[in-house]
Length: 186
Image (tube, rainbow, N blue to C red; front, side, top):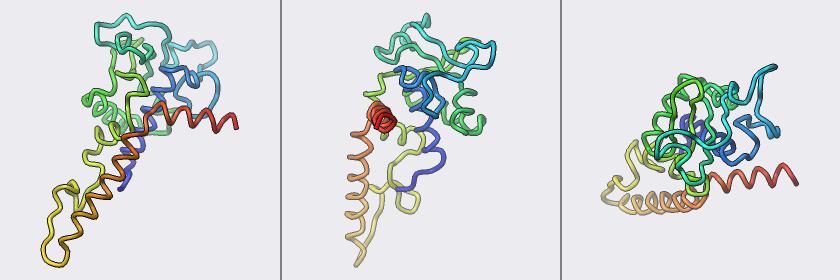
């Protein structure tokens, strides 16, 4: 399995949004600080965060049943995670199209999870931005075909794919946030 910069950035962005929606560290700082970065004289809303229920349409962040209505701006995500904003915007679009993020436009807008962090797996995020978890010569492992002495290779690639899928599909964003909190305490 190759984890591209795009996949790594997508996971980091999703974790930052999840932390903001669960109140994990108050925002996508990635530094473990208890509050979101707010410029002098600024407010949480101006830093890209909004607390409280969303007043958006049905199906929006407030209707996600656990996403908490917290909205995080793309610029705040890019800055806190060290991701080029133009690159991040394409990733956020893929995550939105995959149904993992909801976006809300406007000055108070931003991104929120569509489901609780415990219902979004690492595998969901990886597939949303990268397609198949494992590839052989640029194709999904299931499409690998061999003949002759190499026939058994397809079974190896499928077993690798299955093992990776077990790990990433059983690990949720909430699991990773809990691990982060435990490591910060201990």
